[in-house]
Image (tube, rainbow, N blue to C red):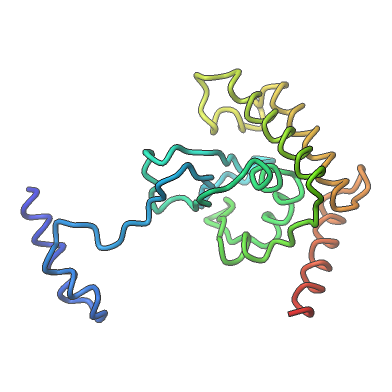
Length: 201
């Protein structure tokens, strides 16, 4: 069965219009490209339930192979995690992302690459990092629960809700948003920032 699968890979590569792919037909038992990072990375699922307030993202060890069902950010820091798991980024995601049926479809090209990151001082980044770590610590209180369980809107643990709310408040402040700003106001302001950034290029 293994040799049959290898033979099918060889045939598929030989039929490719790309010269590089056809050249790899000589070694059908090897990966054509190795994209797995050799350091820990931040994992973002490509598809997430529309019922969730937060897309469940997290750090993964380099020995965990990332499938094509996820997006990865190698060498991401706690600061990046903090901004990306905040209500600000999730509000942006909900407006610009694609959909798979009704679920969110996260894209690096549409969601991540176009997201207007805040300008932050080292002190502000340090504060975000501490609050981001508090989110991870709250998750760690439930080692038997998957991220899908933890971010179920009906069963999200109070400690995790509290940690996210504390992070959200500081990220909102970093962007200059009022603490009572709703998602329409947040996304409108982010779109304006995006427009300004595009015109600077």
